[in-house]
Length: 608
Image (tube, rainbow, N blue to C red; front, side, top):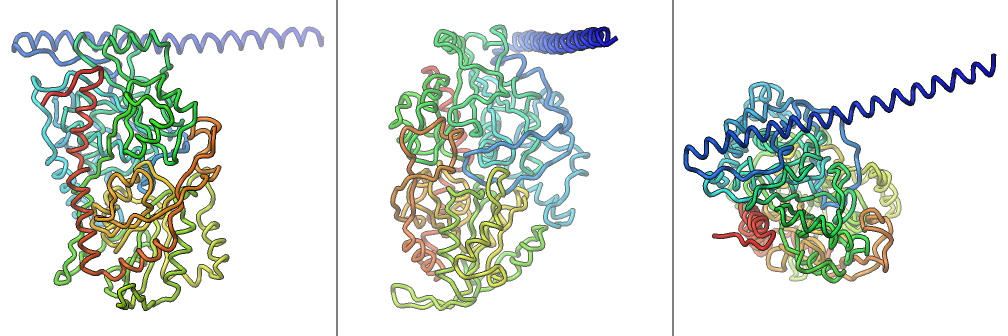
């Protein structure tokens, strides 16, 4: 009986194995059939488009992979993606899930609605919750203002003047700095070259974007990540056309190909055939230390046709690490300079009212933000050692130890000020605990939370994107003694908001920070902490220790003392910073640079 039972169990196991194999094969066949239907649908659409274009004597639109155009964006949110680490510059402070069903993107594409003026459905409006306790009317007014801002971007070009390329932009999800950077640019790029020429992957865990931004995303998102790249040569562009994939994510390392794309590096011959067929791969990468590892360099040189870095700092560090200079180009990050607008420094005008943020601790802290005797330093960053939060807290409390401090400046003048520190940060799932870290640091200074609670608040909760400008406007200065940045969007947003901005004078932020428009701090280079990014971010074990900067603590203290004086010179410098950001790094300007870089891939320069 035992032998029969064992034999029976073996039969059952074999049966189950065969059944699972059949199910797997069935799923593969189903997917292949879906792709066939997708390709057929696209082919029919292309034929119909050619027929209409021929009748109108207008050239047909540039073709791109069928899988990219034929599939609609997901109609509802699915399972939240697994959270992964990112080395992107951090505004990971705005995330907030949105469970609204997306509008029918196919209908939008057929109607060819302009990206910047696409309206949301009534169901979206009903589902929208006004953040921070605003009433319905205020929420509608904010959305109207957002739509108007987007409508001021350049209109999509006419069919005959559209670029001979399409771009698929793989963005990092989770409301990381990378995602915020990507979406800010994509909205402007879609407005410049048309939504039909832009595609991006879905993000089920994303920022709480304004309705107008979500309307643009609903038109350009595909259903699955892998649809951003052609699955067969039949889906390649027509002769003269071009299809560009931009990988804008850091969670798998510098110049990495995310697994969701299902895209292999390919041999040199395969890559050459792709380029000849009009297919190009671009990496949007950055690094916050002074070097790259060999593995990262090999990926940059071997599997991409261009590397777009945000700053001259990264151009130097990448090229000095032996990344091919011919592949490197500087593409700065874009700032929504209408959303992050300059504060009006006028003593004759009443300060702007501070909105409710919907967080009692933050709202209570902001009650006295407009008090002339109160000076609030703001810092926005993700909670990791690279941001150098230890020096920030220590220097603040050593500079302003009392509730009210009489500050003596170098010129002999004195200021009586109640200085406060507001930190907006993100608790990283793989990082240390924010409040435990701060408790330990305060203890080392002989202090406790009870002593500092009235003059320091740390917010780890998410804020909607459109409330972030109010956070900047409620502050009096911005400070971040960071060890290293690839760009640092919060610094640019602070300057665009007209805040006196203090930060280390080393890293990607030197692309826009100068002694004429901000307070860059002196520094020394030292070996970076081993936990600063890890082998996954750096691209393998380092050949030599990575270095980053340690800002001068004395200069940090002096800069903080200087800005609390609110002198005309301080105001003038902050105003210059605002003007510089608005002129050089607005959405339309960066979208134009992106357009030129896309058009120039393969040796074809962008024509005026």
